[in-house]
Image (cartoon, rainbow, N blue to C red; front, side, top):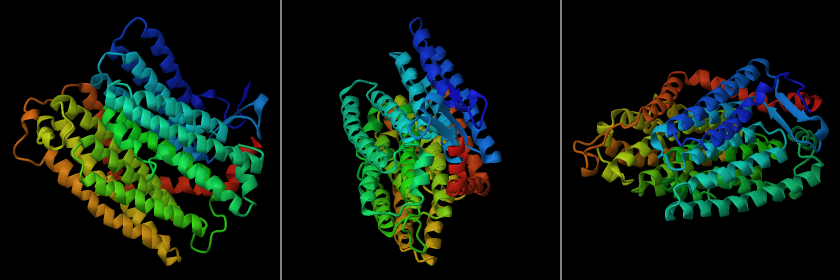
Length: 519
């Protein structure tokens, strides 16, 4: 029997339940019809409702400050499984379901009818798994949903069943399985130290513990294990192969939200175990941990960024760009101040929306031109004006062009790093210089290659001469995402204020522990 201590209704967890229900309904109806319009509409409606409840959860917790908790009476902490929604997880769930909704709508027009039932079933399971990862209140539940996420993502990458897709999926699977094994070892060590996998109880126990050398193996295990799905350098190499091989809607999910789920799991775990321990004045992680994070962040923003400059495949270029942007987010985490973490969350929002948009745009371009070559897509934006203009908007936002949304989050991460310098945090020097240099480098492919070839050319290539917008659902999904970019661009300080509140609630560990444990 489920007991809900802080919320009497089950609907708090409908963002997980509804996508699973959608997969079941599609499995049944799909036996009688392969209509992608019908199955896609069912899936989109169910995820739309899930998005509504995820948003309601976020607004409720933002207003009340009280987490939502559910656990099984027969399996209570310290051993039992539970779901817990705080402000951080509520934000991620709202973002994941919204991107999932846009991809579902997009897929109605983009996907072929062959095996369409399996596609929408797997997409629903992927969305449910993403929400489950962030709603998990203990590490066992998180790991179960994390594995569900991995399995559905592997299959979707291989969906076209050609040589390229299978090779990319196998590479992703091998790296993901190795990462999962490391996570499992890390969880075993964590349980051995604390006697529980409940996040609040682990935090309570570890809050009084000093950082010792025995904890560093756990740090490395989680950093590498979760770093695979988060596409953090050097665990990133599966992503540039997976993107070209996967359907473009799934590319949008991979870069838009799947890698964010990996980073969420990494940050949540490392925050509980290591944040603030043995930290010197001006630092928020131990000095050694700060330096490790800074090195990883610099490598993640620099190496993929330069590789993106020489790419000729539009999806591979966008894939390396995603790794670079994950480096920006990780840089904010490495600095560790309230402002830096809030700015990192802000960039997660901006990158998720803009990158999902760019992969949807690229999918529409590729379908019409039958090529992924950037030079061969020359001028296609003017042939497909909605996709072209939204592509330009998303690209310029990620390039950091003011006053678009991406400018504010990039600037705020750099600003947070500079402010950390005044507190004596040398990590701030490293981060600020690396981000500033790479922001300039990224203009080389965002504007110099992508925007210029897609839109700012006088003549189009031969392959795009007959290109046109071919689906209303593709256009609708693109417009939904660009509306979010524009809204955030007009309301950056309001949005940043919300992220500051999220970080403040996260840092208020005593209130979090009290609310969850007492339930």
